[in-house]
Image (cartoon, rainbow, N blue to C red):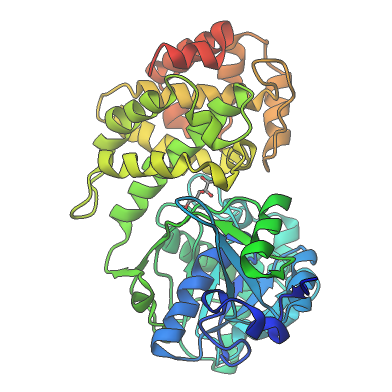
Length: 486
Ligand code: CS2
């Protein structure tokens, strides 16, 4: 009988050669504190960083901090910080163990330990993938400071939130002469660097401090589809690896990272790992947020309403790819000046191919969650720009109407849809106080200032278009509506 090993340092020599980490685990000292140990970071930045260190060296190990969940920490601890990335689609499964984690931390359990790590002079980058909602920003980009956050910022409560960890970490670092630092946001938000700078400045102000000149906030565009790991993925990772792994992540073959090159404390040689270092990320991030994420969310809302489980199923609805192509060509493309050598429609085609990767098992509901946080960057910016140009973004409006139907909490067939969103309470209150007619629902949701803002809410042309689509979806359902459009 074959012996099954558990992934860990002791099992490395038993792994197939192609599955072994590119660096020797534990041999690389930490130079990066990363907040957010979720699947995306482990399949993206961690891989780029391991490859960069393997190519060019440097003390750039990652101290991975889980904000809340202890579960992932325990699994990783039992495996000496090792986990595998299972790449699926376009051929046989491939699993590779990653050994760049140099330590593990827990923000909820030991916030002061995380603050101390941020202040440590050997750390020169603090990066994060904590999802949009963790930044507590309003649509205008202002930090929402409530009593709880104020207490965290002023030292009356433990700094467990992301703004408080950053602010208190920077204050302590400055006092200790920790040296230059880069704060690197790797979440899907437009101008993510500038946004985090604004957030940190505001948080420091509340804490009675200011930002030292040697902290940089470059923007980044991150891209790799990394769905939640399923039991099937765990089995497949073990088969590809020849060892059991309790913390694998699954990803598509494609990966891309575009980074604004502003690192006063130095950085790993990410270019050697295939990242693009540039002076201006804006064309890349606009392209990605609108032509990938905007299209992803659209497919997710329509697919979920039609009762489909996975993104790949949504794409198979008759008319769907044709409709998404129209969204890209008619509404999104005119708002984008793409990077040199890239066309928006060509990019859109590659995106649709990636979404069709059935092996990923990417659930519509996963992409649909946190809609109020995602919609602004993904669809509403496109709509705002088209309206300012005097155009009617017909397809964009359909997608927002689909979100509005999704927010009601039931699919076309009557099945319940969970509303997993930090503003779920506000949405429910708004809907409860409105007539159950299309005009009632559209009006109530457009009135959510935290999502739409006055410009869109006051736009009668957009309101009429939303109402028209909402009515179509209400009368005919997604399947019939999409079939007639693609
Ligand atoms: C997705 C993204 O879950 C979602 O909202 O749209 O996570 C998407 O898979 C990545 O941004 C791709 O890089």
